View (cartoon, rainbow, N blue to C red):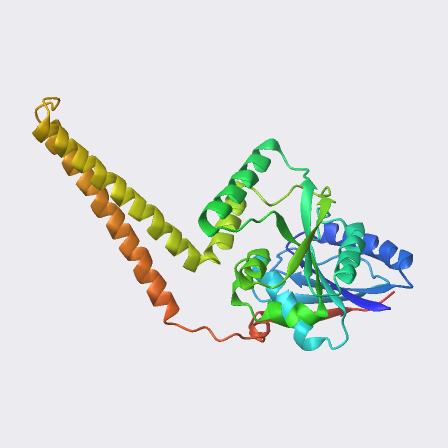
Length: 317
């Protein structure tokens, strides 16, 4: 029987968490001969009182000192499991709201087993439940991620991590900004399973346009090195285009009779100003990049300790 630990951040969504536990209990009954499920819930600074019934599952709640956000809450839970739990086979990263369907955990685990536990398995969405506006925003996010990073991202946090790969994950500093982006950037082997996104158990999704924007910027920030090179490349193209335009304007003014009085000097000044602005932006980005590279961040697997205020072990009923 393999031991599975489900990591799920919770912020003022204890009703959904209760429903999630009930689904996991049913899953445990169905898979009693194969898997043993436990839950690690990260209470991300909730200001609502925790209220849920006792369960037949082992549940541990990590109460954080402050709200640190969804991605950092996941990183905290992963480091806690790595350091505090000796016997584990897989870690499931999922949301508590129902959009990551508990029954799909088995598909992730089976895919991981088929890969001989050598890859992290992510859930790639083939059907989403959100509004058209959100779907459009998410499409724009994926296109921008591809443009700025050169990588393709079409999955979120819902995943199965074999215990043998957990150490490679928790030592990645980038997972504190964006979990899935950090895994891609780290070159840890991963694969995907096509799954439909579920519906929320209660309430409405907290992933609005503002949160999606922050989420997208966090994922792109993981690739700051590559992004700097992309900016340099686009800037050089822009400067080259402006330089060619200036030469063309001067050619028209000096060697042809097509020039309109005053337009050549005005356009030349405008294009020169654009070139200077592009050069300035590139210089600033490169200086920031050089400044960040001189500071070496030593991997730390005990960062989670500083965020945890208390730990609640919910006993079985």
